[in-house]
Length: 93
Image (cartoon, rainbow, N blue to C red):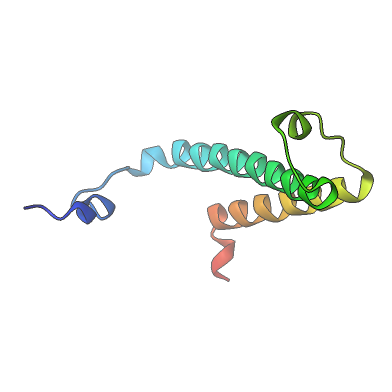
């Protein structure tokens, strides 16, 4: 029986050097999705703290104040900088 974990470490090369740009685009696309999810979690946490409960409508109609927006902007900058640094190899320095 084949070990299902073998999928994580395939024997052959998955992407050749000609696919590096596509890989970078995919990583940046996933980064955008992580940023959206991070923003949504921050909204949920804020609503829970303020109201004690959360509805989908409250999340969708949330209006950030300046302090909240600053926290979100800082979180997005950190996420993006980390991914870009990794793509450039700067995270190894």
